[in-house]
Image 1 (cartoon, helix red, strand yellow):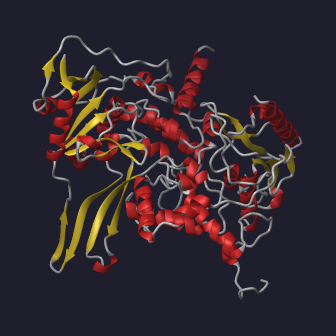
Image 2 (cartoon, rainbow over the protein chains, first blue to last red; image 1 turned 135 degrees about the vertical axis):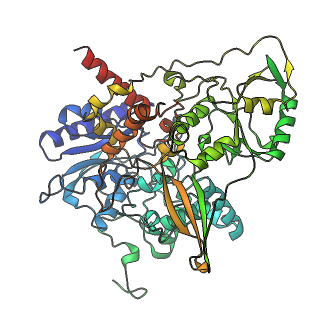
Image 3 (cartoon, rainbow over the protein chains, first blue to last red; image 1 turned 90 degrees about the vertical axis):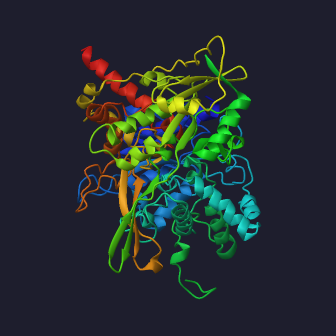
Length: 290
Length: 338
């Protein structure tokens, strides 16, 4: 293990050990080594198990999604369990989104923030999605592992989005229909998304009110566009939807298209601040303070 | 051995493409999939394991079972099934075994699923042996082989300037009769095996571990998507809904649609009144593996896994079927040595 990863792994383990031993949290959600030489999500309930935790540049998963599993108390009438979660800068924005939408309470989560220089693939090359990202520190944390690397934060880049948006509408449509044709409607994109937490997804209703049950192109088209709209102003661009897609759909292009709109038209970037009214909940005259 | 030269094989495939619904490995925007092809030009001959199994062409992701039309004097119902015979070319041996596993539920006993049986009857399976095992493959641990013949009508094996051809059934013989086959001396060498050795605890060993904490460990990180079941060549769960087609016909045309379903989905087991006996992820993950290795083999015969490894590759959170098998086997061994 590289010295820096070893050091950060040790810091995460020590923090987790202290939190669990003192009873401050009931569970630490972090990363452990999986069966294929890559980290995977881990749930640590016991201080004796903290040595399973690891950190390296392959910790891709956005673990904030698992906070939805911890929203309910173990017994009725009790408060929900307090848990710790390891987050990168992009993941941390999802915590703010969930706070803004009253999904979790701040005191319910202990945030172990990790400084980030960008994730890497097996060959050590930075992931494409990390290249344009300038975020080095989580936007919310209770403890910080690592230091902000000496890199100037860069403004977000939407070059790939702009390239696609510049195509004539019919070419864009045929591009997306080809992509959606490959979709198998496994819902991995939705299930992995911290922002997709509806109890009943409108695209999976028994009565098929908005979209039928078929795994057909039209249904998939509706699902993906609908999901993108529902995440407008809420997507934190963690890229998990694209990473988990078994059929390699470039889904982040859809979500980042809308994130770009939000930023350029309204100056709104989801999850940048702890208490931020979701843009689509803001009602008022243009230019008026709400 | 019987042998067909590359150019003769292509000519044969081109003729099949005209007469049959021909499905073969194809490059779809960088993804290797079994897909309909119009000619041998569209076929990829040198590939690993297609990303999805071939079950799509016998048990489609969604399929109209019945078209129901309401008329002034009553209701008409008709089946809408494809008419042409179908050939799946380039089927990997694991995918052929996957279909045998599905057969056990749908056609091996009454009541027969007549629509699946229809697809099965109209389809001839032409296998192409894997020259070696790929990343994640463990077919040899589940009773299969990269050059296995089980469930296939024909098996082709790459050799010199063409393919060795094994005829394995009457259906295969009928197709082979149209091939420009020649007799050659020798046999192609067997495919390379990898060192994968995954234990397969027998069905009877599973129930003792039903309440074991291991299911929480494997299941807690599950995100409840359906990727593992949809890429699986043996998963065969489905749902049926009636859909009104074209709202402007005011409900005069209705289709009864069968679509894939997945036990990993939270809704799968929900019952009338809203109760869900498998409301928690570990319950669902346990069911997935109990189904594959205990319920299905106990009730229907075949194991619900052929060792293709696809679920291992697609799982976003590394729920690894071989890790589960090793875990159960270690429990069994631990108990028997006590």
